[in-house]
Amino acid sequence: MHPEAFRAWLARIGSRVCWRLKRREAVLPIIQLSQMEDEGMELPSLRPRPDEHWDAMQVKQRLQDALLALPENYRRVYEMRDLENQSGGEVAARLGISLPAMKSRLHRARALLRDRLDEVLKENFKEE
Image (tube, rainbow, N blue to C red; front, top):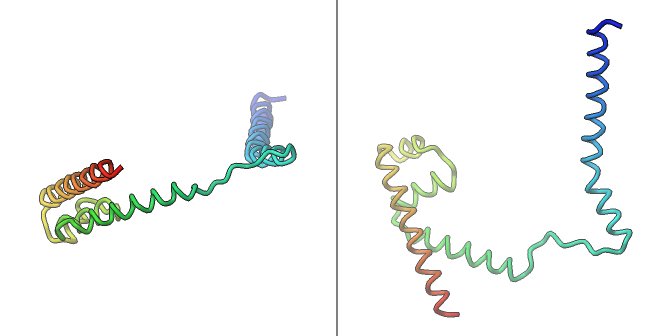
């Protein structure tokens, strides 16, 4: 057997072994879940608990309130840059402002949001 043919043969075996291992790993979680069910074990729910859902809704509402409290020019830059993931240059161009002005407004918007959320958290700790 020529060395090139041997290497090709060996590479083909290696690729088949890797493919089988990869396929087995993909099926392994399903097999494990099936075994857990057969043994009578209860599977944990992937859904959040009601109190976790409520907490998440409250945080989201407070963040939305803080965002709406921003001055329009800061809010628009924040929405476009941080929520819509537009580039800094794109945001500046769409708003008709310079890139340094956009960066300044974004920095100020983030600081105002942080300050507002800090106030809300302090108020919540006082209530509890």
